[in-house]
Length: 352
Image (tube, rainbow, N blue to C red; front, side):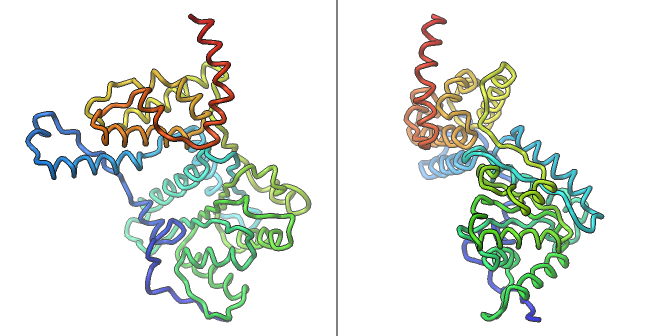
């Protein structure tokens, strides 16, 4: 058997799909910058003012994500399955997060991993070698070996050039057992094309990992149900072992839906660190923000973060509807806004 060795040098970019990048993500606790009073700001020289503005721009550019209903549901269901799977020998249950692009699937998946790892660290505070969570993505046109190498990359293992798939899988499983992995996050699951031989074999490789590793698997991908993942013999087995949690755009169909969206906007607004922003300005614009973004959490986050950065750059230090209109948004949100604009205009005319 070809034995893996730990790579001595971490990747220069430390992406989330490496143990170094994942650890940095888990440990990152963004500290909101302190808003200085007018007198304190006036006492700063130009360089210090620029430094303060840079800190606030960086903070708003990566504004912390609020705890959405989807995130809460994914974390609750997955943590329960981790408990149920702990003593299972086979047929362990998992979670699949499925929905359209921009509905917060990756955010929910990574927040699940972060919450679980922080909980494990509290239980084992002195064990710095423990890696309870693995995060990998399915590469486009994935083959079994490509998929296995994603796990290799996360752990930072190296194999001889001629290593075969069996050696790689054995090395990955041995390493996972050694560092006490109990949750594996697999993103971009829609890249598995089960209509092709390599895609079907890559799906089987994931299933083999699930059988070999005493862990809980959580998948995320775009519209998984329509990708054929649950079709045929393979699909029926997956359907019988996984809970599917839909990630959908927010709705405005009922008063409860509107209240949930309004609360989400209010939570994001409460995080802003702008000198002249009036509280509840965005909350009062929640309906406009819903139609502008199509109820997509990713589009809403981009819109508010972008407006906050522009408010610092233009010196206004507040977000207005006019400023929001200047922030570019994704094509899907633009299309949604065009579709809902006539109905919205008609309702406004009737109400006036």
